[in-house]
Length: 76
Image 1 (cartoon, rainbow, N blue to C red):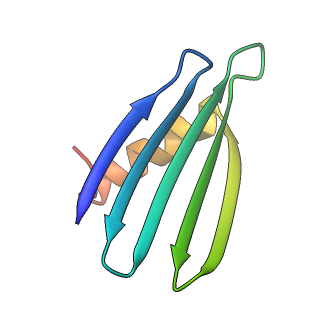
Image 2 (image 1 turned 90 degrees about the vertical axis):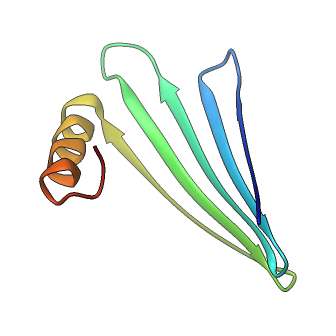
């Protein structure tokens, strides 16, 4: 598996894993402003089929999610 990371000046970060069966991407886009939204998208391209799912979350709820993940031991 090969993993890469790239970030753009426009506020988007892309994490990509390439495996023998396909690629996975995690795209995080920050939307600065009063609502401070983050858009998170997961894409999988496996065996020629593309599956994509996404969620948008505001800064307050994103902080709560990170705190919960820390409590669960999923992140440090």
